[in-house]
Length: 486
Ligand code: URP
Ligand code: ZN
Ligand code: ZN
Image 1 (cartoon, rainbow, N blue to C red):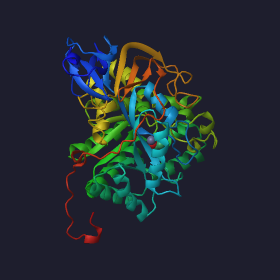
Image 2: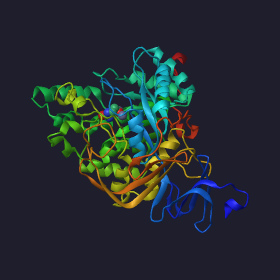
Image 3: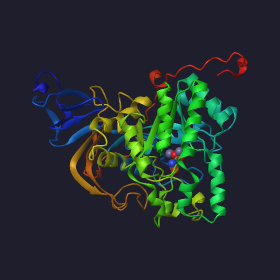
Image 4: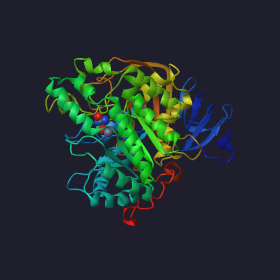
């Protein structure tokens, strides 16, 4: 017994399981001490521990890392229904042990103040560890001046919206370019919500003039080319600015292809898709409750869905986020029923990992290693959380999820824990469920019940690995005045 020869008894060991990481699939015992993974040994070696989880027949993975969450978020509307307390309960039950939340400043706050307020709130309420991305709006020089303070605070990623003009958070190409150049200087990763606003505005006006007000109008106003064009434009600008780029919530075949093209040219361009694009198709907009599926970009067709799964397998796309932005039925309808007046966003943090496993691994669209990469490790690597998060190596935080590959569940708003009264996945049956979630060595969820502690989550100050940001340098333009050079 290892503990008898000088090692203290471990806090926790997990025995008997298949251990899957982004690198390999093995059979090992995992030992946890003081919130960290301290040993991984062959199955026959006996270890002594205060608690043993016997997990034969189960799969052990690094805890999910969600790159895209809007807890306590408001995007041109009131606060959505997932806050850091109930949202992290739902996340933990669903196998997510850390997340990066979007924070935007009110007109009264600086970006740094908004981050400080969010940190104070999340430190009180969150049950799992968290970091932040800063969402930018155009406040002239103030926006650019605020970036270095955010980086110093551990927030080296900035989201800009190439859409949402009427919501007041649209960024022009000029701002994009300046933020990209400044990001390259600061070692930060700019992120874009890529949709062509001008085209969408004109199509929306035409659809409304033709009497199309239903949820189908949302889909028709935002064809896939509006996404692909904006991704290509953002990648082009990033190249010129000498910056890396992360494209959030990619929905379409053409969109992922645009990322693939930039990557094939050696650009550090990374793509994220979301669970709803992988699990649903645009048929949802014909349902009676079609407006409950209004997310931007919209959910698309089967060919798009197939292309997104393939892009995850071929590493054209790196990550899967939930884009949890939970509006309930009352909030959805607060401005009327016209498609362009519905608050965009849907709940999803709890079902991200189960859906990825059930629709990805079970039918063979993803291997176990690919599943771990896109649900956990790649996010940790890109955003400066690795190897503390996204890994089961010795020394990593003991953020561990045990999946029962045989357990089935039917998704339903009534039994899920997100703060909304409807689910996009109502009635969907999936196989393979997280049954134990461990965050820094503590069991926080077991068999669908939260057993953790609100406020146990810690803020993670991040810095991004320079290798992630490495970008071919733009040709220095001979006739560009020095004052304009990035
Ligand atoms: O429709 C969406 N995606 N809502 C959440 C906000 C955003 O754009 O990420
Ligand atoms: Zn967005
Ligand atoms: Zn989002």
